[in-house]
Image 1: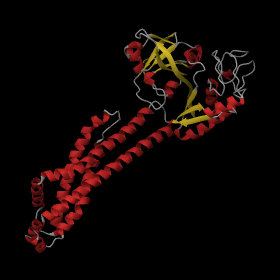
Image 2 (image 1 turned 180 degrees about the horizontal axis):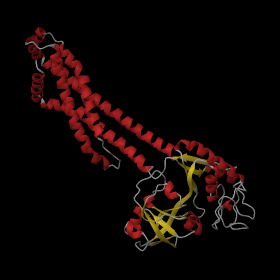
Image 3 (image 1 turned 30 degrees about the vertical axis):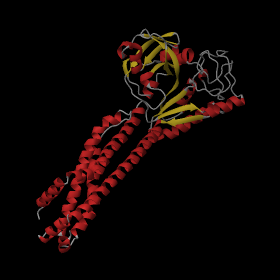
Length: 446
């Protein structure tokens, strides 16, 4: 019997039992749709990770003071608060490495490790611009480093009826390249702004729209932060969500010295972000940074994290979730395959006489096997195609839940491959049983 004749027989059998075929294919439909959505959700998770880390270089290293160290130092009374500006005060931590205790000040009463901004030093270790200078000077394989301080401040513009609390970030000029911040208009903070404690601000894209009506209107305008007027010298391009606690779109960037003196003072804890020039040397750079800080602060303890490891961990978590979802989809396929197998077993029982007639007319076991396998594959491919269409159609609905879903064509291809494999695997045994029937016994079946 020709293959075209086998296809004709399969088509007749399917058309005579359309409802049964549709119900049998439901498991495959659900499985295929699940595969499409699982791959879309998994890829969406990867996109989320990339989006969150896009403002950080892979070689970025974040340095913070361990809370445990602060508590221990406070209990030991190692770092009493000191008054600013005594004797040799007036610059950032003295600018030298002559005193490495990090707790007591240098000669002349200036407390080391604290900015000369007229604020009272907190108990515990506090990172300073001097530490940044030391890290840049003494740590090899380092591209750049910046100290950062963030908190909230009361902000007011002409477009607002009352003050609103917004995120204020004090940073150095190097922070722009470290965080890959792109400017829509204007310029970022300059070294002159830092040295002179200028009241200038670079505003995030979303916040500019909120405070000024549009991102373009914000440039060159003024706003007040904690009652002092700042000129907007730059507006950032839209950056999106990030992994760190500071979102560029909703933040105001001002010089670190200005933030320390006029906005945040001692209420926030500075951190340092450094960039390794070679990603392969990140661990060595981290060890060297720790060594420098331990020399500056013998009793201090620091937490160092690198963006590469955080990104790898986040990607691993997203991949693990994807694998779990794929496992669920495979289980659904197996259930659908069992449904196909059961239906084919029933079909073989119902069509025993038909099989006997075909064999009596000269059909071989191979042709009977091929007929039933083709029928199984038709049901699975039909279910796969409907499932793929349903999967892509459900993407907008899933997005409404807040999840990031990025469908891929490969998801549809894999769903169809799984459908064919399921039909072949679960349809083989019933087809084999049909092919093994003896013609005389088959014809005698009622």
